[in-house]
Image (tube, rainbow, N blue to C red; front, side, top):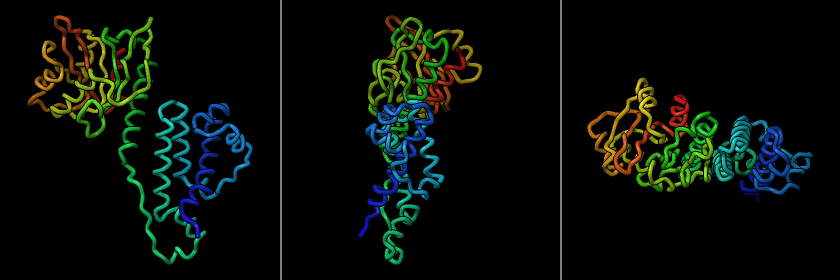
Length: 299
């Protein structure tokens, strides 16, 4: 008797780990860095590198496996994909391959009588909540990298700080929006990021994004920058710009400004300041990456 989970453990996991280790070494990772990225020991990495771990040829040859290894390797190298996100993606592929596919075929070869049993295997939902959260966090990381690599972005950071945020598809509260804890700040002309993106850490920009979504704007990503009339005029040549009242509580003012409008994204919201309120521009877009790219265009 052999369970399909044994096929996964004995054949699939050693193969994909070896492929990932090789991919990361090809991208310039040291043995220590590969071990850190994959959450395995350096001795295991050494075994993979020296071919001491057998790879299953049919798994290696599967285009879906090869594509996933390349995508995860690229994401780990760029910092866009966390170890958790990589695990989720691999788990999803495993469940897909278990359902009347490659792993099911290997299982039937190990247990020939299964071929006559017409067995169906339960699979995980490929659009599960954990995967979606990891997608959003990865998008915020890419948006951050876009802005940090853009010359001159630090000069656009307002005194209250900037943030890059993205909401889950069905976001209702700040806990459903990922952003930078503590906000981005200008330190000697460089944008400093105080920590890794998390959910529920951006009350300021997240509340504006949620208010716009509540008013019917199909935005999931947002970036706030310093108010500048010339910047706003330049953005207005390509995107709709909408002013809201700085003296009201921001979410209330945003909803009031958008009420009755048919607004699509990208869109630029702004307020020109009030007593004790710094003027700010908010770029809302389909996701965090798009919002960041729009800001970069005007640097």
